[in-house]
Picture 1 (tube, rainbow, N blue to C red):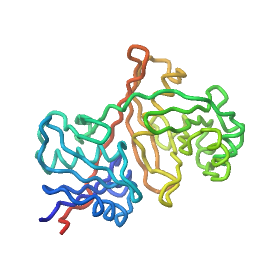
Picture 2 (cartoon, helix red, strand yellow):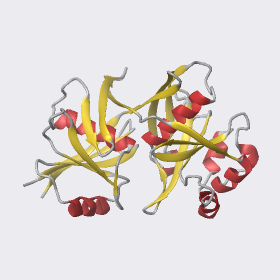
Picture 3 (cartoon, rainbow, N blue to C red):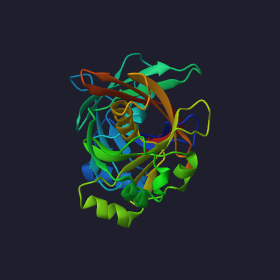
Picture 4 (tube, rainbow, N blue to C red):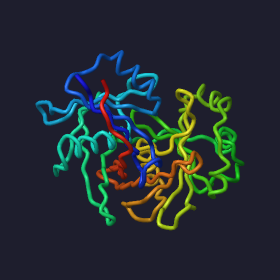
Length: 294
């Protein structure tokens, strides 16, 4: 029995930008050990495994593996896997593609952009705010000066299963200079702060975009994500909570990945609904290669 093997770039306007993803589609489920081994050998941030036949609830069962372990939810694997199903299993069918994840079912919808490209969207899980961190301490942890942090907004934790610290910076120069200090983050972790950090600023590389961002973490030897759906969801809730934009709802474009030479574009919609946040994350998916896995 062979399995289709796809590599796609998510949040990418062209190949070899965005966040790479491997998707394996096969009628027979592979053993867990084999899926973990393939994810480790592929060595992308995530690899997904999906069956081409829907389950009773019309959803497609999806398993998400990092090189180190299986995880319940992640943004760019959701969008990339749904895109592969839509184009290579459902053959461009309209309507949402429903993914059955460990965390539950997630529908992915598709729109056509002004350029005629598919934009895939998913609704993020509920995001909640957490505690704040002194700007001086966070500045040391991310390699910037205290004055580089925008004092008009807090450094604050936001969570949705996983957690990240949101750090507003004043300039693109500060964003470029930022770098993860593992010792400083280890000290913060003893106080319950997460080791994932999402930095952003208003200045952008391209005038058509609204914010520029970097997402740092420490996992399987990688310290920076070229584009992140979960991080963008945290940011969307943060922007609403602190009225970063004057409107009660907004639709923005976020640049990411320039420092790791994979320029990415994450689309974000956010609004308040009944006192909580509703955040949708979207992006382009660009095919790179496909074949068969024996």
